[in-house]
Length: 235
Image 1 (cartoon, rainbow, N blue to C red):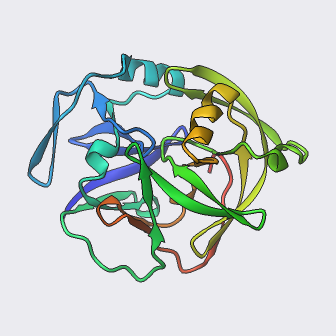
Image 2: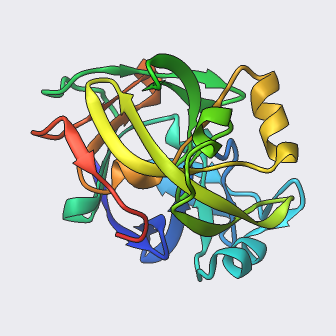
């Protein structure tokens, strides 16, 4: 087992690896950054400087961060992790283990985890993206509600954009959440729709409870004593 410091900074989950900060981003299939390699559990991983021409300096500029790199699913999928923001720790395990919590199945599209979400009495497939500060759902029922705020976001390769926020009640496994969601620009929403994905679950479900994340076993678990969590942007 290996352990690293885990923090939430400017709405992003950061892991400190060799005392340098890296964004934890399950929404990115590729890791990249300003270091040529990283070691986890005795295995060395080569780190490209860019992902499709995008460098970490651009991410830092858009996100208001100063990180060394981004850890994507090419590395995160190789291990079993416990992301424990309340304790500020990220544990990496070589072997999986049983946890006292409901198993939440994961599937994958182009290496990105997909989770089943229950909302409005139906089930939907959403990307699980820890690199996203908010949830997104492009169903017309979301935007038919009164907006409760405005959120400025960005997408690498697309640039900055703004979205209205709307109340969003949903369940993942046996865990119920009362949160907010935005609406993606059509150019970003179209590829999701073509892949059979209806939206994005952002990192807020990781903020208040430890999460066991096991892509190797195509599963995750939220390790909470309570099944309901109230989460607000910026906490």
